[in-house]
Length: 176
Image (tube, rainbow, N blue to C red; front, side, top):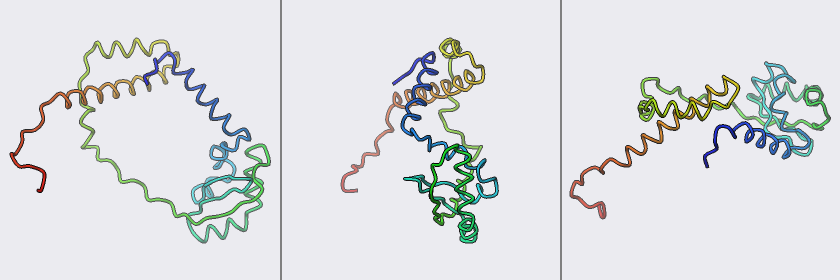
């Protein structure tokens, strides 16, 4: 489904409204206020896994931190509720979940092949005209980059699909 750029702000507002409606108690804000509520040191070593029926389950990086935080259970509960502005958390539980290793860095030397796909000036002008109604320059620039890359990927795919298949080697794949 392609959404015209002029409808994008309305679509985003509607998606946010639906997300808010899914959490009438505003419990989804827990992840937004976590670091503010507990401080950077704790936030680096523990994070919320879930909040269900008033029970907050935290993932903790190491056993010593889990022990330390269990001693601070009540202070954590109060800090989170204060940051949320309501008494959503009634109990805090802990689960040892070492942090996942960071993903390996992508090599800057191997960008995706479609990223080099050239676009005509007319395509750029068309994208600019499509995004012109967006008043926020930063949002318009971000959306422009997304549209240009999407168009590059689409044209790359079309070009590859139009290319002739590789010649056959004469061998059948069955029974090979």
